[in-house]
Image (cartoon, rainbow, N blue to C red; front, side, top):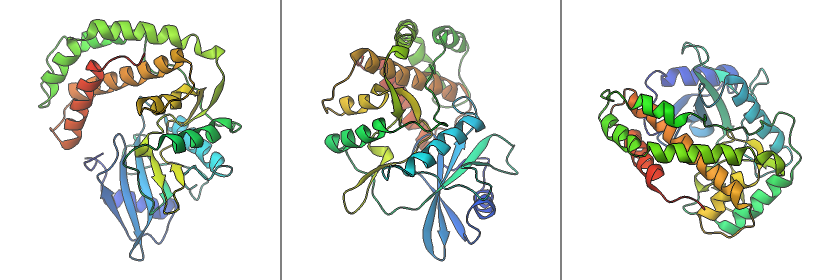
Length: 305
């Protein structure tokens, strides 16, 4: 996220890092990067040594499911150098709750700091090769299984939510109007999504990253490509990852129905999240502006197939 979390001070993050991972850490520096989680650089002896991530626990992940996802990454990293996995804490866990923040609202994880760069554009052949290796690995026992993320009655829920004004932030009414104008399409997309989801069990399932786009990649000075941000890892049809290649114009053999399934999941989940975002208080921040632009994009873009 671009902004600091309003209810988590840097001192709370630093204290958790010291208690659970790195006792000699000297300072943390909030980083305005990513979208969906908050991040800090951890400084030790005058240099950056770790990358801290604060994930919200709630609708998308429980504390248990987030721990399982990061534990899966740790296991994968023992076999695949392409996986940038969290460090285990002194207790052996990959995530820890923050205190005195209300217990269970956030989970903190830590990875080693890397000087590798995030690529500006996706390298199709390199990413295809990387995903081929990931999809061939034996699934760790902790790997979460994909299941539909979007409720069948999403359009009904959004219709009810849009019935009253969204006046608790500067973008609320614009977002409400945009969603309200597309409720029929949301209902159609949702029905199609669940029809496709019912057929997914008959496909081959593999370990998928979930969001292997360039923002979740690192390239080191030797050109080696690695994947970060494993909170979305899951057993699923390979198209859950491969759709990213297609979106970037890289041809790859896929089952079109499964590409459509995961494209619809992305679109509908984004719309649902942004509806909750803009119906709630929001200050008109840089992250709010990005979210509003993305909402309009998801409501208006062409279908994947």
